[in-house]
Amino acid sequence: MGDKQQPTFDFSKLNFDLSGGGGFNFQGALQGIQAQLGGLVGADSGYFDSLPKVVQRRVRALRNLDREYEKIEEEFEKELKELELKYHKERFTPLFLKRTDIVTGKVEPTDEEAKEESDDEEGDEPKIQEIKEEGEEKKVKEEEKEETEEEKNIVGVPEFWLTALKHHEMLDSAINEKDEEALKYLTDITHDPVEEEQGSFTLKFHFKENPFFTNDVLTKTYHLEGDEGDEVVCESVDSTAVAWKEGKDLTAGTKGFGPEGSFFHFFAPPTVKEGKAASSKIVSMMEFDFELAISIKEEVIKHAVHWFTGDATVDGVEGEEEDDEEGFGGEGEEDDDDEEDDGEYVPPEGGENKSECKQQ
Image (tube, rainbow, N blue to C red; front, side, top):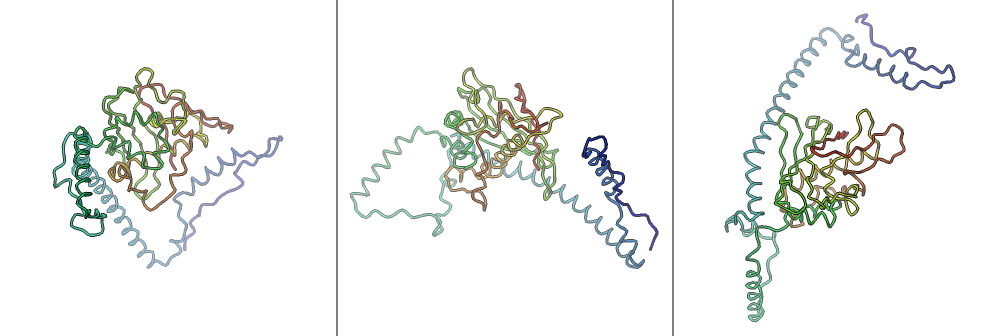
């Protein structure tokens, strides 16, 4: 059946030096384990050689089928990515642009566009109870007429995106009252895939002229690694620095998100000094930051109108947003963990903010 030498794990090569009173040499043992495990990766178990020749021949055919499957799978993933980009550009984006035009008041929807979807369906929407008394009916019509007169000067859908964000439990926890004043000027939130990077994406927050900062658009890009179905890892984050007007910096003197922080720390992600390992606190900050981004991309942007009206929920799960804590994320956040060799938070110094974002 073959005298092929099988790889073995030699414990004698590990550095368990206990001499000199130095104790267990953990680093040496770890390096020895890693070196030997590296040699075992991809090694033949020997089972194939133990099989009868006729079975080996069939197994080789099965291996060739498996290789063919991998080629087809690679083609599928390539075409799927191209299809996703096609639909994003040609199908979804035009709808989102139309939504923006209505929200900002650039266009007025037609009667056909504004009709109730359930006009011809029963049970989808509650019917208005008929007012039988003529006096009450007349009073209601007069009130509706007066209300219409007051609404003539309303442009688009006021505070659409602020309301949508606040109806999302996790995102609402990151916004304080001062943030709301600035977010009232938010006209759109969009996302674009990074075409050359599988899974990577950019969030764009569009603002009209406001008294808080000069940016028209605040962007944040998440660079991811990992294919669909595999573990996705957030490798790094690039973010636009907010160009605050004098005396209007909502993040000044604050840390993290929420009542004691500011949502705008989202645009100053935590970073780790080169050569340092991130502490558990920094990791938690990065994880919360990434959760916010995914919620905005996958939930709020896609179905913004339902978050605006308050009838949207996180798919199939309740309470998952409860992991957010005050002090997560943001410029100026200090890593006060006492763990030795933990990464230290480094506040970005203007320009484009960059952050490592290891998401396991």
